[in-house]
Length: 200
Image 1 (cartoon, rainbow, N blue to C red):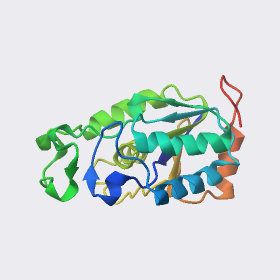
Image 2: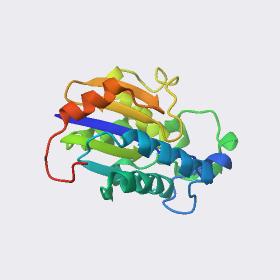
Image 3: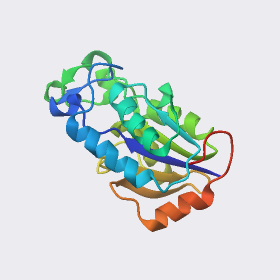
Image 4: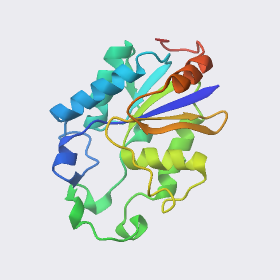
């Protein structure tokens, strides 16, 4: 059995400055972002978890660190759940990016995002927390909903929210939630196994 618990990072300096950036360092969480991450950690506290993986980008790593401290499980970096490849528009103000397709702009494609998450999901056993970014998470969820990039436009993955996918059953349990319901928590914990890793 395999369940992926996708968490977007908390608000960071990129967000308040309206910059898009895939730099690994230089844009930490804001004070509000740390508060958001702590709320996510509280929501995840009742869940039994095998592993916590994080994007190598600082805002994700800081969010994962807050969650791992609550869960008492060390996180590890997985570059496959990194922020979108932004090409020449890395560290650009959002409103300065032309309204063209990602392919025309030389950015990482929708299909590339899905392929790297597909590779991660093929390795998931038990319950994994994956701390990543808005667009990559949206692309991952869309694989299970049968949506393309345009069709998934309305999926909003806000700061430090939680989305849960039962990979084995190909079922999305929640999308961009700030609070986990008892139904979702019970489903996740019923799936838990004792494969290698901590189990808190």
